[in-house]
Image (cartoon, rainbow, N blue to C red):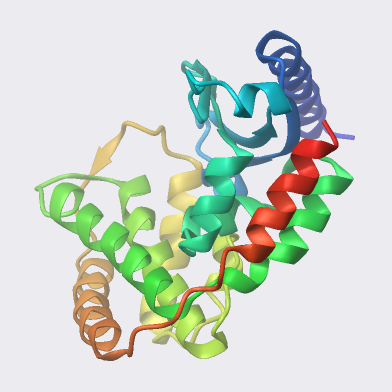
Length: 262
């Protein structure tokens, strides 16, 4: 095992230890924890932090309190770790809305913690994915990134991916009508112009060797692609008919059975 893999293994052990601390100090049961940022996407920078997201369940007594506890736990935010989690009640509510963030967490290739209950829960909720809401969410992220971060004289490489990933996800959803993969390499299997593909692949390699805060000159070809795709997905998404959301019965059943088991 090389030094990099040893270091990653040590860091994963540290993360699992922190998750145990969260369970003890917050009196919760963590169901699932995974990486959600550039490490999960497949192109971490040398100084990338660890974006750890987790789903937890509280005791029945906590859910029956008049003074409801917060539905998020913000555990740590520093140069190394960004760790926070959602209560299962919040998570199930967001699955009902076809929240793309939750589907991405669930598809992460780097899983730190997974209980059997979570595997059963995801089997029950994955059918709540809806095409139009997901396209709207990904389009919104890409457009916001473009307007806020990609129009200056210098650009941070990582910001390109906050537009490219969601736009390629839109392509995947349009073709397959299901939640897209989180790994960028898999999204790159889309049908792309050869020159554009080369520019994006080069950008991935540059990103891996560039510090997070470093600024560089814009890349016209990639910027032009982003602008064209924003136009495409604004039009396509607007033309889609509204989709009926799933009912609440299955989610209520999942929640009740889980809390009863605590």
